[in-house]
Length: 163
Figure 1 (cartoon, helix red, strand yellow):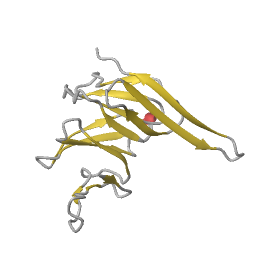
Figure 2 (cartoon, helix red, strand yellow; figure 1 turned 135 degrees about the horizontal axis):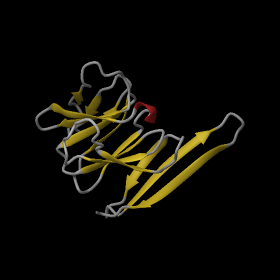
Figure 3 (cartoon, one colour; figure 1 turned 90 degrees about the vertical axis):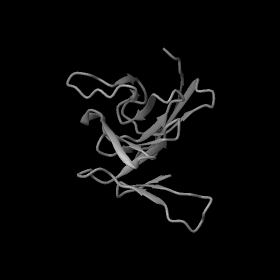
Figure 4 (tube, rainbow, N blue to C red; figure 1 turned 30 degrees about the vertical axis):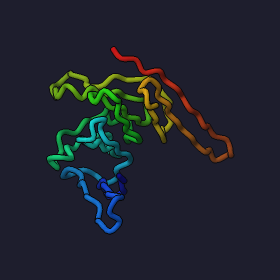
């Protein structure tokens, strides 16, 4: 699976090298740039993180958009998305923090927050997230190069606990 500047996500079948990829197009009026994508833990859905501070959830079996999750616009682009093994949650990274999204609720009413904020690399773009096979640990990475030759390369580790 790849994401691209035009906002689309391509699913490649590596078993058939001559097959064209399946293209998942962004919803109407979505600006370009898909920055990250991931499969859900059950393999039936795809989550696409976008530059416009949204995460689109697609049902890959039905071939349709299920919903768009919206971060506060001040959060910046969604740089990474990653599924949690419970199949009810995903992690997203943006310029301000990490968020754990509760996908078991499909409530879109005023005042209801569907995510929990986890303090992270505030002010830096998270370039990678990794959850170990046991689902107990998360690692996030950032790296920056400053104009004067200095910069930061940081990895933070988190222990994931079920509530």
